[in-house]
Image (cartoon, rainbow, N blue to C red; front, side, top):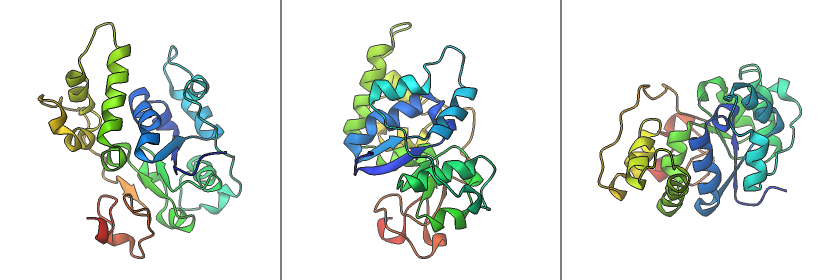
Length: 218
């Protein structure tokens, strides 16, 4: 069984990104949420991972991640794209409150609202939910394993900004270093749903949610 921490399902495109995945998996529990994924997401992620990358199944074993259940009735999510319907069905079956994905706009608002799940870009989610202590712990873990070439915690923090500028900004004063600049800009859609990212309450008017936060949490 998945614990009673806030349940956060990771999409395949997140599972395939080692740094983002580790921030969510390792930093999640001390931050009050538990990141996991489903069999469908794991299969899709494996297809897109580099040949020598650690398989998602091995990552699960290393960190004690329990696969979420396989949801039924995926066809009811008509406003969601193709294979993502099964991912949303899996998230609903697991009782997830959030679905972290790089493709937020693949999920239909009505579909998400019908099961009380919000789809969130990983940078926005991490910047809002990851605690400073958890962030520091994950950075130290990466630095410990990064031997060739070696890197410092400050350098790794700066590198985080390339793909997670919001997360870097949230902890910018942790180290005295300038952020590395990313190549890609932020997606146009970084949040979709009716559940506030901070208080986790359902907001009646989705248009009132800005950057994942309802009026009372901004």
